[in-house]
Structure formats: structure tokens, C-alpha cells
Amino acid sequence: MYDGGKIIIGLLIFLAFATFPFYSNIGKSVAKPEPSLDTPVIKALEKKECVESKDFMRRNHMQLLIEWRDSALRDAKRDYVNSKGKHFRISLQNTCMKCHSNKKKFCDECHGYAAVDPYCWDCHFVKEGGR
Amino acid sequence: MSMDRREFLKLAGLTCIGIGVGGAQLLVRSRIASSEYAPAAEGLQANRWAMVIDLRKFRTEEDYDKLIKACHYIHNVPSFPDKYHEVKWLWKEDFEHSFPEQKNRYLPEGIEKKPVLLLCNHCSNAPCVRVCPTKATFKLSNGITAQDYHRCIGCRFCMAACPYGARSFNWVDPRPYIKEVNPEFPTRTPGVVEKCNFCVERLSEGLRPACVEASEGKILFGDLRDEGSEVRRYLAENFSMRRKPELGTEPAVFYIIGGGEEHV
Image (cartoon, rainbow over all chains, first blue to last red; front, side, top):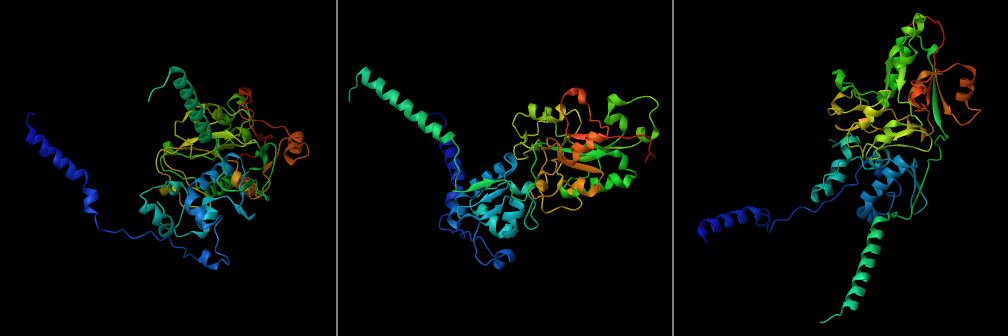
């Protein structure tokens, strides 16, 4: 191999850079995300229930929001009847965010942890923690 | 392992069927929760929403500006200092440019000089809907030409297609140019086209459009298919005009022009 030494040194330097995020984080723990439900509207609720169960929402809120969007905009159906028969007005800004008014401590907590950056709030207006 | 030709073909066929069925299942969208979607119970329903603007009743600039202000606040319409960035939902234009084919000589001054209140015509044969490559803009069953900003890619075909100039592009971030944000309605982002939505969100709450409400009777709103509706009765009693009817777009906004009233 011509210039084998240089190539191998180059490769080692590349590897050192490429794997930097891994070894620099070895042994460090990142705080578990803890979305907060501490908002005045949620506190005032008698039964602290979201539109669907907590487990369902954790797993599927993104699909549900897309269904909501398509239903409201495309089919003009803005009333959501959940699996328990309860009615909700379909609106991210006026239904979801009325309870979860703490975007920073609720949405961003997990989204930041999972390094996802949904663009909902580019348009949907929130008073606190918006764009 | 040995395999004869026949065996191989059988297996290959089965594999193809398997892939087909699996793929088809991926394509079929299914609901994620055991839930129902319905039109809001309190919402207003119609077969064909339409608007009648009685320009005879508009007397002062304030009569126009009040409605524009109400509309633009409710829908977070920005006001840019640069005219080229203008975003229009509801706006004023002179007679000649509103009805270019109706421009005649020796018109009464009260008509020639009077501003006309313009907005999206929610055409039955909407050219903007036909050209949209992503189906971001579409017709609802109640006749409203709706737009899904999530889906708009900002190609501006609709702006080129609309014969009424009812669509505007967001060249820059609109947020800093909205004086007072209405927290109930979204803003837009740079790179999407927007227009009047006939207050589709208010109709679903049982409210009439913002301009109709603010006009105090100068604008009527109702179902064009219902012969007994207010708009139909008004159209039967008064001579009305629509913008560029010869294009066949079938606008749903009617204007009552009137005669030689005092001009604004």
C-alpha cells in the first residue's frame, strides 16, 4: 500500500471524530423527560383525563393529531367523539393547548429528549415557549 | 439444497403475492383509535355558501375598514410596510379594477369612484383548485374553497390561476408583522399561499363570517341552493353582479352596485 501510514493515521483521526458522540457520552446519564401537567386548566379538572388514555396519547398523539387535522380541514368534521363517547372540539390551539398551556415543560420535554423538532408551532400560536 | 424449476416458480409466485398483500395493507389507512369524527353539532350547514355584498349601504371609508380590521385580526393577517409583500384576505379596490369588463363611459360618480370590497370568490369551478399540484387547496362539500397550509409547497400556481388576485404569498415571516395575535387562530409561515377561508372555522362554531357580522346587515350570507334563504330572496329582488362571470368560474360572492348614491 502506498502511503499506508498516512492513510491509517487519517482513518484513525476520522474514526476518533466519528465516534466522538459515543465515547464522550459514556457513563453520563441524561435526565429522563418528565412532561409536566402543572397548568391551571389541568389543575382545575376534576378528572384528569386527556382525549384518550395516557398510554394511547403517549404512543399515538402524532397520528391522532394528523387524523384531527385531516378530519377538520378536509372533511369539515370538527367534532371528535373519543372511545368513551365524550365529545371534543378538534383544534390543536384551542383544545390541546388550552390544557397543555405549558409547551416548554410539556411538549418540548420529550421532543427535546428524542431530538425531534415538529413544526406545529411555526404556525400554531402559543403564548409561552413558541417560536 | 436442490430445487427444480417448478418448485422455484411456485415459491417465487407465493413471495410476490405475499409482498403485494403486505404492501396493500400498508397503503390502506386505518383509524388509530375506536373513535368517531362528526361535524360540530352547533355548526352552520349549507349546500352552497354564498355572500351578497350590498355596496349601496357602504357610505364611508370606515364602513369598509371596520370589516377589514375584524377579518384581519381574527385570522392573523399581517400588514407589511412593503406593498410587494402584501397579504390580502379582504380588501378594497376601485370599480374599474374590480369589474374590468363593466367599465363604461359616463358612469355615475358614485359608482366610478366607490371602492369595492373584495375577497376570495369561492368559485364553483375554482381554477386555483384545478392547478394545485399537491391538493393543498380543495373544495369542501358546502362550496367553500378551502386550503390546507400544512400541504402547501408555495409553488404559487394558484396565484397565477386565480383571476381575482385573491391569493397572497408569504415572502417573509408574517409573525413580526401581526400587530396583535389572535391566540385562537394559527398564523402562517414563510413559503405558503393564503386567502380568505369564508370563516370556515367560525361556521363550525355556529358563527357567521367575521365581515358579515361586523357589517351590520351590509353583507348577507347564506345558502345559495335554498330558495327561501336570505341571499336568494335578496338576489331575486335586486340586480346583482359577479366579478368576471364570463370566465365560467361561478363565483359565490355577489355585488349589488346600485345607482347614483353619494360617493365615498
